[in-house]
Image 1 (cartoon, helix red, strand yellow):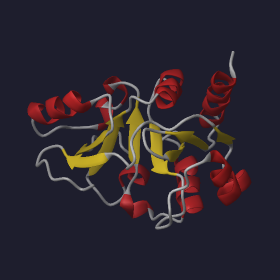
Image 2: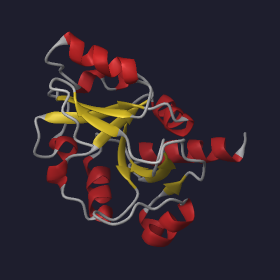
Image 3: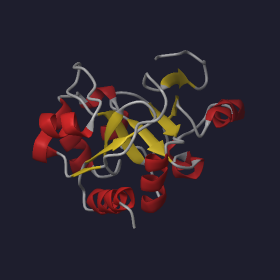
Image 4: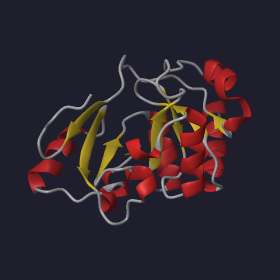
Length: 185
């Protein structure tokens, strides 16, 4: 087992036990946890200084991991998203009753993405589920672009770090409302 595989294995164990991990995505390092573990999500929000009302993105390695969380208004809404997945595109759908308020914030929607990044895929495949994805930074401050910077900023507030390369994108994922095609980012 190589170092990256060991880091992923450790991160999966940390997530399953309610911890927080820092990991690479397509463009930035993210902080993640089990989206259904309220205490873990609240820890991420506290660490970042982020308001729960804003909601969080949930990422997955396959659409089946997020399908129970969304309720597309029209079949074409999901079809459009599927054309961009796996990939660097986040879509907003009406949320299902399975989505907790600590994920959706003050919204009746949820932001979801099926990632093509190998670390995200490995995490979600090993978890057999989705993962919270929020940038590894203090709210409204610059994004941190290395595990070293993340360790310096957050220290032992993060339970595991995956030091692996980012993807090939310079900016965070596009965010589009699935039904209206309004671009939010």
